Image 1 (cartoon, rainbow, N blue to C red):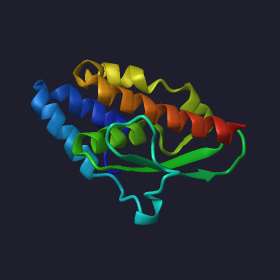
Image 2 (image 1 turned 90 degrees about the vertical axis):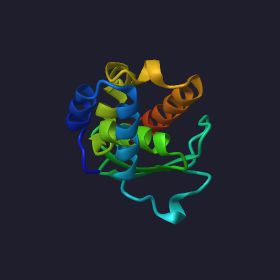
Image 3 (image 1 turned 45 degrees about the horizontal axis):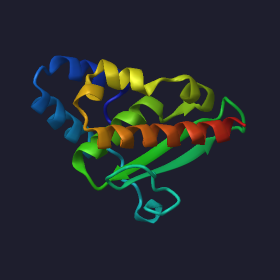
Length: 141
């Protein structure tokens, strides 16, 4: 992924218009590292998303809270791919303990996304974050 979380937040804060923010979100989705075709499996599918979303993870070290988790993700919807890219900027490459302690919803709120996503997309974001945190809890155990 080319943009880190601080860059994404900074870019969001520069964009006043929601159409521009949605376009930026779509652009973020285009920067996602491709998820290999063989990772588009039922096991990697995130339940609770209206669009199709897949998350694959790789663990480094561990087990325990210091285990680093690296995620790849994909979606069949452009804006959702952007939301996946944002979630990966927040969580991928961090330790299980950091992932568990990080409140992505506060970041989504700060960016104004919570107020501008449909309830269905908000539920999908929640499902994606819940899945990432569940993976982190399993890695930390």
